[in-house]
Image 1 (cartoon, rainbow, N blue to C red):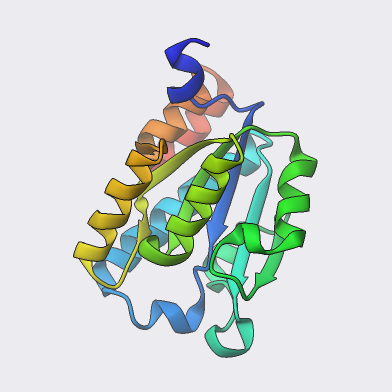
Image 2: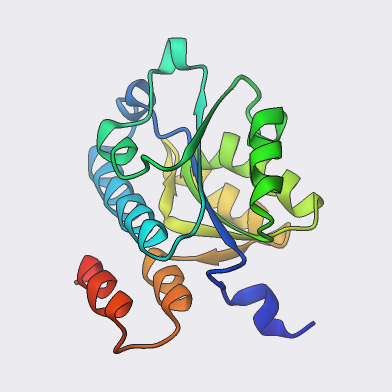
Length: 188
């Protein structure tokens, strides 16, 4: 296996996962960090739609935390949405079945909270043998220390830390295409 197989995203191998970006959970987050997170997840959702990359969305305990933020939900209309009670997305049979059904081996992770649901999901996905790319500027926790600790832990577990622009341009591969012209505008 080449080093590129682990570190470069390929659109025909990738699936985007948006974990628990829910209305009542967002209220507890730093407003500036949340604004950046929502912008970056929006970029990734628009890119996934353009590049025909499957999207899975999870929601933790909807009764208590509400649904996914409307501005993200409207960009993820084709996504399958999975309510869960387990912190790890892998604790939801529906999520695991939907992920397997994509046939994809690279999982692009976004969402919250980094040190709880994101971390537990990443470790279980790595344990299942999947390549996991954690988009650092599209995951967050209420505290920066918890976010940093989780990023370090996920990296030690073999996840690839990345950022929105790196993920986007890896999926695009080349400039000059219609896709590049459309999607590169999202990060200007």
